[in-house]
Image (cartoon, rainbow, N blue to C red; front, side):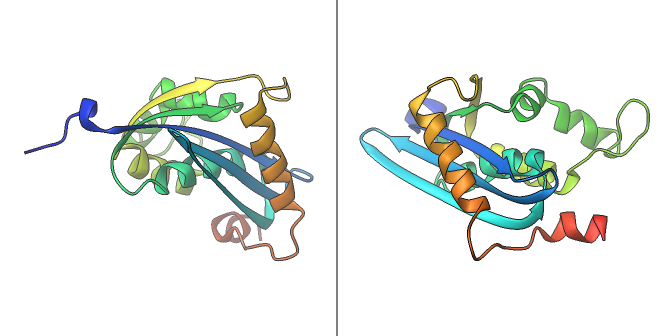
Length: 164
């Protein structure tokens, strides 16, 4: 018997990305909530971009779920929310990862991962204005900046290989 969306747990995920310079050291912060249970995740990278961190925050939040869920994903990134609401990654994939003008899509590696993880869940994308006093978004922003300033930063391999 297959599980229907109504049988799935409802989870809220807030995610944010930060970059100290663009490019520069960056990080993401995630807050996940299921009922009264809350979980925070963060990671930092030595050289990356803000858009990559915004994307990676949403991806890692979804990837952290251990089974299919009904998710409301909150982000202040119009880049991520608009693309997902308008199904741009599927369109780009069908075009061979090219825009209408035939130029390559930025962050293809992350958009591929996004398509993998989003397909496991029922996701509603919710844009919210950043730095507007929304407690969960402010917490994610603080986590993302903490991660970007961390002393043990990971390597954003795909980004660094592309620019070096």
